Image 1: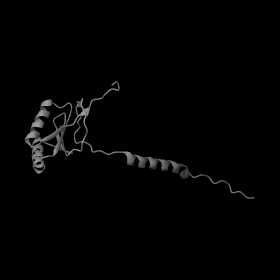
Image 2: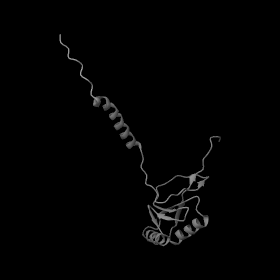
Image 3: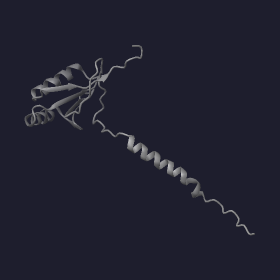
Image 4: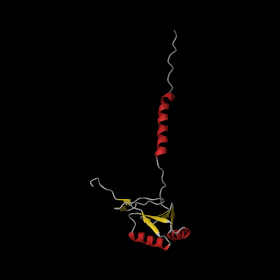
Length: 138
């Protein structure tokens, strides 16, 4: 009886299970992961003691710590912001506006921005905050 000598294993055969696992992990993270848009300016909202339900926002105005403004996903100056808001409020007066101001921003700047929003015709304004951390004691 004649036996064939065992053939040497190929390096590709050893790495195939690893490739399969990597692709399965890639597919898993692609399906379970969530992509979100990056804000045009860095804003750290203030902490709030009260919590609320976050609804889908219609219009987002951002105020950075340095006074920089953004509308939706674009950096904008104050006059252009007021003009854009006036146009949008004329088209849809019941539009919900979200204000995301940096916690380190001067409160006078936030109040001035809120006044400017009111002058532009905004009737429904919500201020975005971060809920305060609660300890497990209670």
